[in-house]
Amino acid sequence: MPAIYPSVALKNRQREIKALADREPVYITENGLGKYVFLSEEVLEHTISDAVEQALYESRVQQALEDSREDFRAGRSYGTREDLLAAVRQKRGAHAEA
Image 1 (cartoon, rainbow, N blue to C red):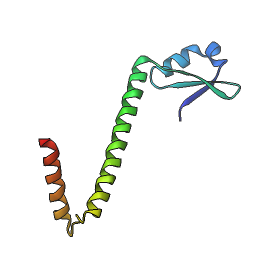
Image 2: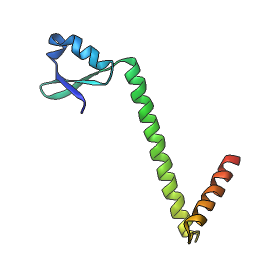
Image 3: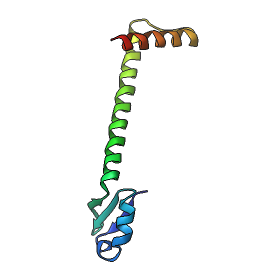
Image 4: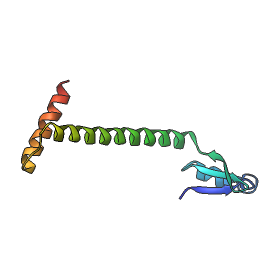
């Protein structure tokens, strides 16, 4: 659960907010509405890196699903687990050579 503080905490709890912002994003609200986010540069870089990694993962999963649909439409199906794994190894080898 992210840390959420009212805007008056910037005045009354500066040390606590700064210490927490060194480890994770800290959200500041005004009248219960989102307003500001405080975080260190390291936390920002880590947050961006995680977002990029998640986006790449989602893209790879989407591509795998699209590939599997195309394989099914083209009649490429496998009767055993071993046949499937062999096809995966062959496909990975073809991608590595490209």
